[in-house]
Image (cartoon, rainbow, N blue to C red; front, side):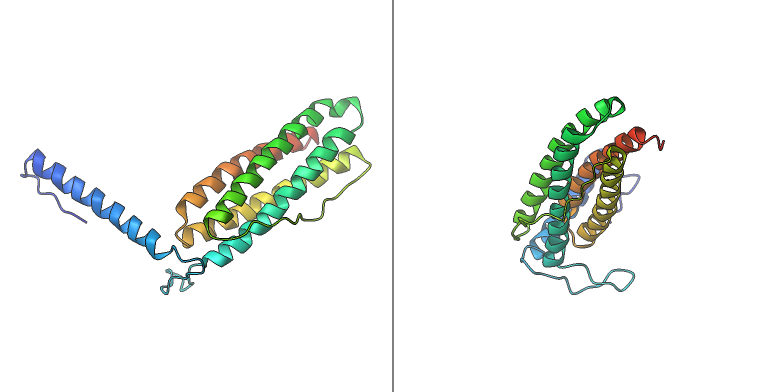
Length: 191
């Protein structure tokens, strides 16, 4: 860290601040450059003695997330069309919006997998179905809760692996997933 004397001129303070900022950016660039290799795993461990995940481990987790997004797209598309009863009219429209948002999530996750040097999966997790409208919403709620839990884990994994931009993208996805969870809880009378 750069120390700035109180008696120094403002010009010197400005130069010191610039030096600190440039030093930090250089460290970030160096750290990013060192982790560019497809399967790189930094040798040093974190404070708990755990090595950061490799890119291949992050990619594997993201592919699991992508498969869950495919499942959600399928379920939302089907459930929005098959919910029965006047009490489900509003949520059916919301599920259509959820389906398009899940597609946007899938596209972003696939893009991140490709950026990291992986191949996005084309396989979906097994979609669930029910003839009962309430059970359909319960299925979707459980899926959203599982997705949120897994994205939280992926954010930690991405940050430990030095993939900070990825963790920020995933935070944006989680925000929408939590909105979906709220919509489903409201429709089920759980809030």
